[in-house]
Image (cartoon, rainbow, N blue to C red; front, side):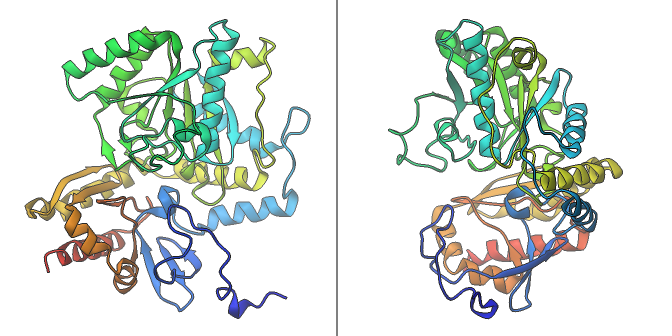
Length: 423
C-alpha cells in the first residue's frame, strides 16, 4: 500500500540531464499556481524558466483546468486514426492552421517536441523519396542547435551543445554548419550547400533563438537568408518553433519576424499552456498533398496522439492567447528585462547580455559560474526562485502572465546570485 507520508524515501528515479544520484536532495513540489511552485514544506519558488519554457499562462490556470475537467468527464482517451476521431483534435487542427503562415495547412499531432521533429524529418525524407529523389535523405543543421533527444533529433543537434560524443556511432551522419554572421559567411554557406544539395532533404533551424544550445540569438534577416538558400537549392525548410512559438519572442511565431514561410513548422511546449504533453508538425500543402491524393501512406503514429485531454488544454490555451494581447504582455516583460539587467553590462565577469521578447540571458566566466553552482539548490531555495543555468549561461524565460512585481522580484534575486560571484 502506498504511504503518502513516505513517498520520497525509496528512490527509484533516473533523472534527465543529470547523474542518477542528485548531489543534494531535490526540492519536493506539491502544487503550482500562477508563477509559483509550492514545496512540500510550504515554501514557494517563483519560476523563472516556466518549466522548460512551456508554462506560458502560469501553473494550474483555472480556465485550462476547467476545460480539461469537462473533457475528462466526457472522454478520457481514444485512439486517433483515420476511422476514429474526436472533436477536440479537429477543432485544434483547424485553429492551428489559421495561425500559421500561408500554405501551412495540415497538422500532424505528436506528444513531445522531439517526436514532432522526428515527424518533420520523416515527412521530408518521404517527400523526396516519392518525388524520385531518393538520395535526398540527409539534413543540414547548425552549431548550437538542439532539436530533441530521440535518435533523429540527436543527429541534428550540435553534440557540443548537449549530447556530447556518446551517441555519435548510434546516429545517422548529417551536415553541421555555422549560421552566417557576415556576407562572407553567407557566400561560403551557399557554396557548401550547393555542393551537397542533391543529398539534403531539409534544412532545420530554430528561428531567431537557439535555446538549449546556449540561448543564442541571431537576426531575422539571417533566418530569411537561410530560407532563401533552401528554396534556391530545392531543399525543404523546417522551422523548429517548439521553444520560440506562441509569443515567447514577441510575435506569435518567430518566423513572422523574418516574413518567411517554412515547408514544415514544429510546435509544442506552450501549445497546451505547458499543461499536457502535446506537439505538432504543421505541413505545407505541397507535402501534405502526397498523403491526401497522391496515394502515399505516412507510417507514423503513437498511442496518445491527439489525446483528448491535451487537445482540450491546447484549445483552452489558444482561447487565452486570443482573449488578450500577448504581444503587449511580452513587450512589457522585455522592457523590464532591459531596464533591470542593464547594470550587468558593467560587471567584468559577465558578458553578452542579450534580451529578446520574454527571454533574457548572459554568460558568466567559468570560474565564477563554478562558484555560483556550488550549493545552487540551497541558494535558489533561500531566494525563493527557480532557474536552471545552461553551462555558463544564466537565463530567464518566465511565464508570459508573470506580474510586474513578480518579475522585479525574480530579477532582483537573479542579480543577488550574480553579485555573489564577486565575494
